[in-house]
Image 1 (cartoon, helix red, strand yellow):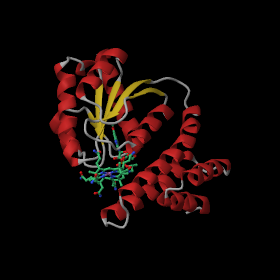
Image 2 (cartoon, helix red, strand yellow):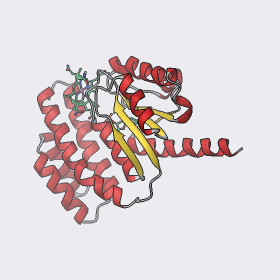
Image 3 (tube, protein in one colour):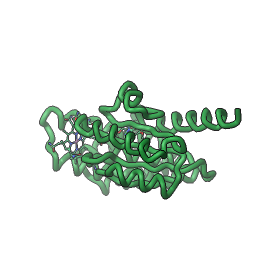
Length: 219
Ligand code: B1M
């Protein structure tokens, strides 16, 4: 691993947000690809934090500080990714479902969609079903993205999909779901259109589903 990527990872694990911000900026200046910085420094650092948390080597406050450092790094990467894709491909309404406060992964999904040319309406965390429904009505997005990180909030994801169906809004939008406990089988079971294991594949999957829909409409 390049030295600067290793340093970003180490500082993220320590929760040193200013250092992460500075190092991400200098990695970009060195010409390292934004995706490499994301995958080989930020995500790898956060994975170490996750494992340490699981093994009781780190506790909640330290995890929160590491998450803040991750966000500081993402903030620097986002405009760079966005600049490379100016053409608007559609709108994404995105949020972490009710009861769930995790937003690092969701923010990465937001960033990748923005980078791919989508306008992203980010509803934040702990989003109730009715807010998803209201915002879909308001923005008529091509894609709706639901994120969940807790096995205990999977039922909230199911109930959001049900609420979108009940409001008659599913025909006009593609529902994508993801997050660590969300499997492809679960996505099928709750009637989501797409599932992706990571932020980059979420964009690819949404683009493929949108293309499929356009072809169907043309037939
Ligand atoms: Co929490 N937490 N947490 N936590 N936390 C987990 C998720 C956990 C796995 C840790 C563990 O025990 N090993 C565990 C869940 C167990 C389970 O349910 N199976 C857990 C727990 C138990 C809890 C609390 C209950 C702890 C407590 O209070 N006792 C509590 C719950 C609070 C709540 O939500 N109501 C809690 C709180 C927190 C913090 C607030 C301290 C903090 C969140 C800060 C924040 O997000 N702003 C936190 C963190 C940071 C974690 C870990 C360590 C890291 C999560 C993360 O940011 N990962 C996590 C352990 C782990 O994941 N190893 C853990 C990095 C991120 C890049 O990955 O979010 O998975 P991820 O996103 C990925 C993919 O999942 C995917 O793309 C991203 C990568 O490209 N993806 C999508 C995500 N959304 C997608 C949507 C898509 C497509 C792909 O389409 C729309």
